[in-house]
Length: 174
Image 1: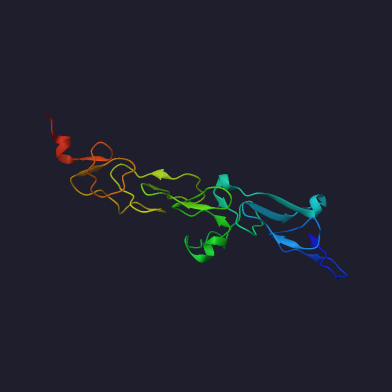
Image 2: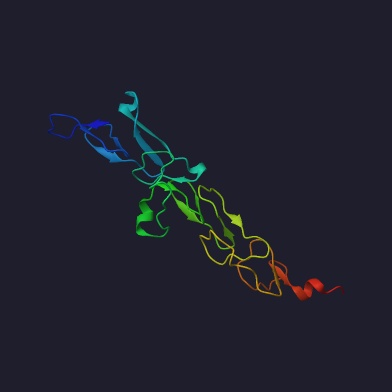
């Protein structure tokens, strides 16, 4: 992909992750949710622009040059950091790809242990998920004397109709 800046004698090559505007006077960073890569032939002005592989758990923020971008193999940038706003790569555990290059943290009561995920999982019976973006629930056992049903968010749930019942209520046979 080449563009011709005003006053130039020779075309200038665009970087990966950029595409040539219709005027062919500038290169523009690939938009969120898309990737831009030089096409092997001269179709579309020698460039390829298409949707990111969101349904496979990848994020394509501005400047992506692959439908399945990787960052240093699988080294992830910490979600919530400033750099995560421009991160192009697979979704890390606790997050899902929700389209348009956006990583969404799993909600309270859910978790996701895997990378490349497109759906969060309800917290398991006997565990609780009190935080957003959880990727591990090993240390979140419900308190002794309480029974937690799927999706519970507190260690000692008390609302028997929604979340749980205490052990005493389970043993009551009257």
